[in-house]
Length: 548
Image 1 (cartoon, rainbow, N blue to C red):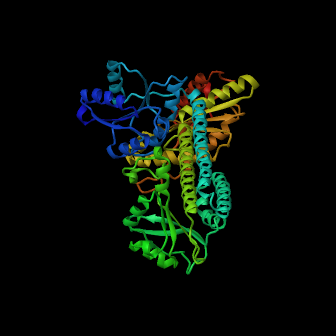
Image 2: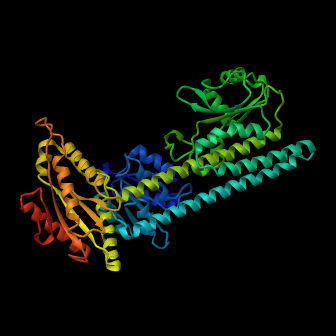
Image 3: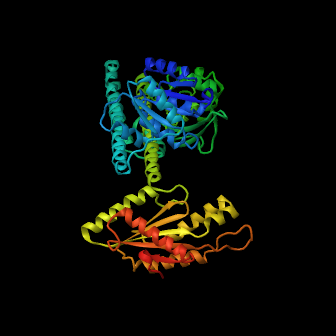
């Protein structure tokens, strides 16, 4: 193994631990890459495509298990082994990290010699797995912990909203302003609480302008989507009175304007025409016929409020499914009513838009993680090629059916199916056409069995079907039907350019008639399948040599 060509990425927030790991990895001749945060680790993994990733469970911005789940969801990174390296002493921590997607687990403190040996094993292809009977339990635990973490984020947002009350001290001099201020605070909290109840990030963007205009007594609000490649911003949602409809209007948004917004902490307040020194600001003011307005960039507000969610460098490299959509720009003004904004209003707007940025980011993060968990659950029980249940799920369901038979004395049958002469077809037509045959036969089996039946790919060109409630003899008509359907199906033949005919052989065993042991039932169905092959193929045979 050429160690110099092997790259190892270590994601760890402890600088002393990173320094020690750097010495160990480099001394062994490997290329060493390090990251102190989860999002930085994701960016470096995309950039360098390491051969192995070591990750700590506790990171400042997101848990190591969440980083692992995200990395495994990316096609270009899913095959890179990820090893959890942690000193956590939580019960079942090894099963927990493997359920999250890690390929191995090494506990701290490490023994250097043992660690190097394990490192080489994982680089050579070693992988650890959670026993199937525990996988569902730990996946549920993982989801519950995610929800609890998101609840804590919401609690932080509520604390942020409470801090707005401190602004009261600045408004004592004016009872009218104080009354208006309190009204705005009440509406802000109510609106923020309502926004947190939404499940769809796009719904938030759609309804926000109307709620802002009506609640904060404005005349206009527009939400734009910023396109940095073309230096423009396009309206996606708006409400209020306009000289002409913003629909379809593309306004300039230059890098210079973005820099001005950043210098103001994410919210730029234009008080009069004299501040419109930048061309983009002049174009915006001209289009809206406005001399005073506010431009707010959600990404900048979110960044300054929740520093731990992303680094300031190279935010373009982050996956938009896991970070806030920083392209949204909010425009508000009081034209044509010609009223000026008060300083306290600007403070409230900034705090409110910070809250909106965090809520929106949480929605996107939660939606993305829900999608990844659903995908992971499906991948755990489905065959990647045929989309039938996989071998692991089949064994689990077979054990359940045996247990049900023992308890209730209800029968079931097991069909073992093999495609005749599939190797010859594959050799003649190629693996692509062979895969298409497997998909077509899988579809035939699914469409012609009941929803309660379990149709699975056993391996290669073999399939299995569990038929609950059906005795072995009553399974014969269904088996014959499946055999006949496959026999007349026109499989593609690119060599002879005419439809090709393929056949299947089927072996059947029954429970409790043949056995009450799931391993024996598989062996018996396989023996019956062998008998069908010996009888000339394209046959259905019952266990113990009974043949149709």
